[in-house]
Length: 332
Length: 239
Ligand SMILES: [Zn+2]
Image (cartoon, rainbow over all chains, first blue to last red; front, side, top):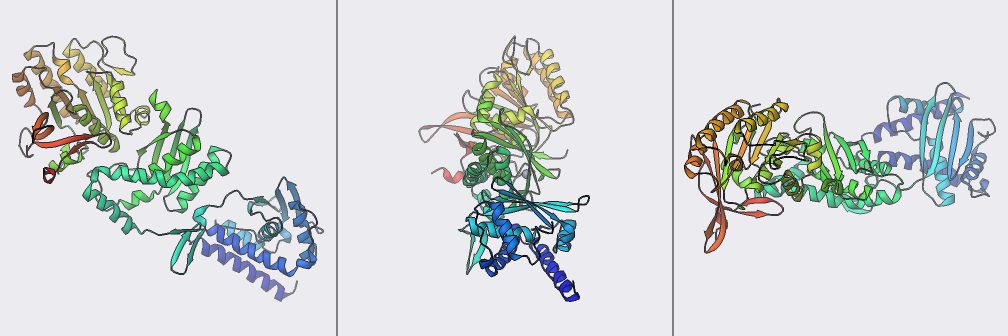
C-alpha cells in the first residue's frame, strides 16, 4: 500500500471516529444517525456497482455474498477476510481484523466506549434493505484478541425506537412523525407549581395519570413486537431513557406472582423538584414515572399492576425503587 | 430526626404551616361515620410517602377494612406491607387472628401497653407513625383511674420515643368528663362532627393545639371525595 492510500484510509477512520464522538453528545437517535451514515455510504457504493451486482437469490446470505464479490477488487471472501453464515433471516459475519480497513476506528471507538457501527456491516445492511425491502439492523460482538476476529450479525428489525426518530423540519419538531415539543425544566416545574398553587391535593394523581395514559401506546407497541415480557419492558425503558426520564433497570420480575421491582437512576423528576418546594416535606416524588411504569407493566404482563415508589433519590440514595404487585394479588 | 410532619390533608396542613414534631400526639374525636378513618388513612399514606413506618392498630373492625380502604384510594398496600413499612395490627379479634401482627386478649390495659411497646421497639430507629382506631373501644371496660394511669404512661413513652401518634376516640363511648381530662394530655386535637349548614347536613372539622393554642381553632366545613379523601372547603366556597 502506498503512502497516499494509507493516508486516505487514516482519514476515513478519523471521519468515522469523529462521527462517533459527535453523536455521543446528541440527545436523540445517536445510534440511528450513525447507522444512517454507514448505511448511506453502503448505498452509494451499491449504486455505483449496480450493474456488477445481480444477487440472483433472495436469501440474505446470498445477497451479501453477491455484493461483496461485486465491489471487491480483491474478493474479501476469497482471501478469507470475511466469512458469511446464514441463520434464518439473519446473517452472521466473521471478519479478520488484520484485513479490516476500519480497524483503527473500531478499536478506538470500543476503547472509548463510543457508539459504534461497523461500516462494513452498514454497507451490507443497506444492501439487504434495498434488495429485500426489509429494514435490517446490525449488532457487533467485541473484537476477540485470541482469534483476531470480529463477529457481527445482521438481523431484520422489529421496531425502531420512536424516540430515536426525531426530526426538525422548518419550524417544527417531530418525533416518529408526530409533532413534538421539548420542555425545558422551567416549563415543567412551572406546570407543577401552578397545579400545586390551585389544587395541591391533585398533583400526585395528575402526574400519575398523565404518565399512565401517555405510556399505554408505547407499552402496547412493545408488547406487539416482542416475544418476552423482559424484552418488551426493555424497549419501554430504552424509550423512557431516550426521553430523559433516567436509566431504568428491571431488578426482578415474577410474571406468575405478578410482582416486579424496578429501579431508576438519575430520575428526571428528582432533579426537577430540586429547589422548588412542591411538597411540605421531602417524599417520594416520581409520580409521572410511577404512572409510566404502571402502564408498561399492566399492558405487558396482561393484568392491572399497582406500582408504588418505595425509595426515592429525592429523599436519599442514588436511585428510586418501585415495587409493583398485580391488583388481583392485592385483593386476596 | 428534626423532621416536621403533617396530616396529609391539604386543608388541615395549611392551618399548621410549621408542621408537627415526630413525638407529637394527636387526639381525633368525633361522631361515628363522620370520616375519622378516612383521616387516619390519609395520615398513614402521608407517612408512607415520607418514608415513615406506619403502624395501624385496628380495634373496631378487622385490619382488612383499612387494607381495603387504602386500596380504594389506589394505595399499593401489598408493597408497603411486604416491605414492613405498613404494619396493620389486629386488636379486633379477641382470640385467633389470621393477621401477622395482632394484640389479642385486651382485657388488661397493662398488657396492651406492653404489647404496643414491644411492637414499637421492633421498629426502633425508624421514623414511626402510630394510629389506634379507636382507642375509646379499648378503654371501655376500665375505671377512670386505670384509664388515666395507662394514658399518662403510654403517652410519655410515645413522646420520648418520638412516635407520631394519632389516637381516635368515638364520641359518646367514654364519659365526657374523662374525655376532657384525657384530651389535655395531647399536643393536638382534631374534632370532627356532623352539623347543619344552611339547612343541609354537613361535616365540620376543627384543629386545636392544646398547650400554646397557636392553631386557629376555627371550625371548617369538609367533604369526603372517593378519590382525594377529606377536602376542606375554602372559606370563599361558602356561597
Ligand atoms: Zn424518585
